[in-house]
Image 1: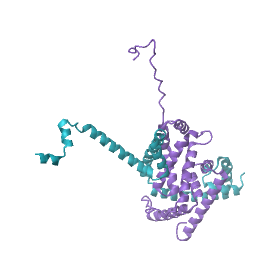
Image 2: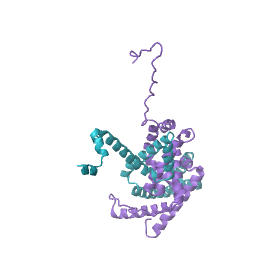
Image 3: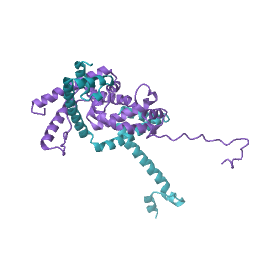
Image 4: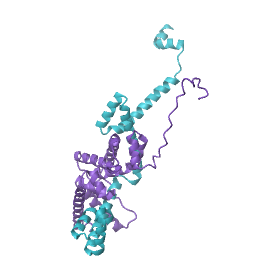
Length: 157
Length: 209
């Protein structure tokens, strides 16, 4: 049977739930706990610390990352990772993109900015495209008027 | 198309290769997703991020005590994982253990560079379900424990977070930390001894028992 000293050492490391202990020790530990009041007392003491540890850790985590905020954080994480992976893939085909990706790797805060910059760039390009397609093509007179500054036309009249 | 192709005898119509069977990303296990991701399948990797992102965020948040920093580190961890996933061998380690190791190492590197921070404002919110006295005791104990956790050396705190809070076995935590199982056992024992002493000190100063 497992010596009580070894049992106590395992309880000090892995806590009061034998189910968390390394599998090779569990059967012997359960047998000792069934037979020894001292072993059961060590388990109970370890379990009290487990409970305090879990409560303190959970409280601290929820303060930093409330349960409701976790889903949104994971969504941001997915977008960020996908964006950086896409940039890395692009870097293999476009040298300028490779330079940007290396820059992003060196500047920790850049990935967040890169998302904004990309969105801004896309918006500007879309605006240029829409402008180019919607502005009417000038006819001949209009072209002349564009070449003729307005103040000069006033003097002629 | 074949009916309209006028060169059937001389030049056969090029045939499109058969489409691969659709992949069940949600139903696939980690190893299958890792293999697909290793061949360049970004959707498979995204499924891994979806599956393990919350864990990575929780571990990084616990270790850095800063949710913003934790998001950046988790993102960096997954990008590194993407770059290396072609070399991941499911025969040698579970994907989760491999990923935990990347997250833990990044957090440890960050902690080496960063100065220790005080507990955040607003820590210890009240639990409306408990009575006033229970709230007070539980709050004091949780505060003392959280303060003690913050003072733990990084490796001990990482080991405690992986084993107690994320449910890894000692062997898995050992792989994640890159140490032996015996070393993890020592880290856990030292960490728990430190916490026990701090709780006793808090109780002696009028805090909880």
